[in-house]
Image (cartoon, rainbow, N blue to C red):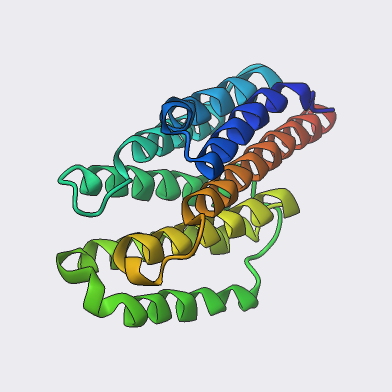
Length: 220
């Protein structure tokens, strides 16, 4: 059974971060954002069964890439934005590989084809605002859609987390590239979706890995 208390550390950091965004407390919001993925990584390590294997290290690598993305994806006008975008793209590529191999438990449902509609629709809606970022965002959206679809071949926690992550990135794209349409407290909403999604994916991954180890030990 997973010891959920370790994920409580991450949950506390995430709560502090979202509340600081709601309150406009930048002095707390900035450092707490940098602590999010390290805290989640520590929770995954402490909650995971031993010994660690390649997929477990791969998941930690995905969190490290997301941490780099957290650092650099903040302002589309910044020259460092593309670094953050590339880091998140790589993180989703790792998730995609892990979801299709290490924690896969079923076929990908046909219903996930709706993600193609999401991808095309978002690009059509934002095409006039994306400018030079159209191709990078199109590539990122394709990988994001693929990783989200693959999450539905795992367990409900991972699938739910992937949907929250997708919602967060959709809202972020809207806020960055169509700022005139941004809504009140958009930063807090985006980060609430993101932190919740990452938490759900992490717990689901640890649970799936523990289940696979138990199955292997019984069959062995």
